Length: 158
Image (cartoon, rainbow, N blue to C red; front, side, top):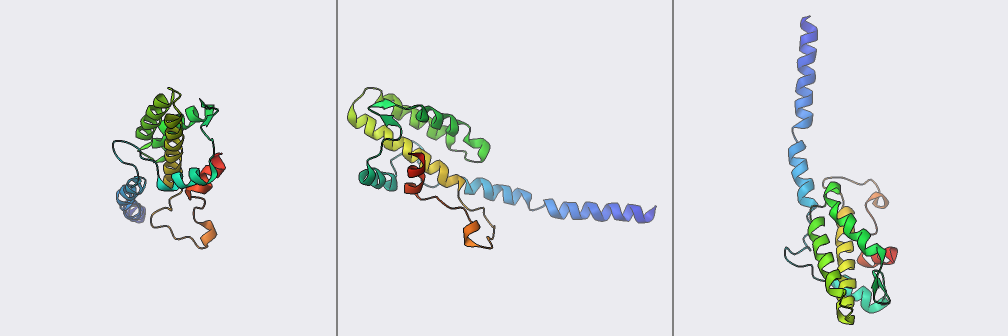
């Protein structure tokens, strides 16, 4: 009986040691999911997104001045982003919807701005998801997260 009790105590001690660092790791994960490029009040167009649009002149979210269904899907994805560890998703969704409302006037400048705001939101979201896990050592560079450049993300989305 004594040996069984000592085994149970040993298992409990091992379990306590194993889960002790969990809160610290969770705090690191939450901190790592907060992108530095998302301002609190208004999403500015990322410089990498602007240069992509200047070079390729794509139409990802607006075709012929009309919004595509992909824009509504982006809003849905951003609204559920906290489930994936991206806590700024709902804020980005609000900003995307604001840009879409402004573009509804049909003014070419507003549509161009909304196109870039939506793309900036997508890039910010994807880059946050593809950020390497804090403390993880990748045995081979090819195993680390890839495809987090703005042009790669937008070419894939296009």
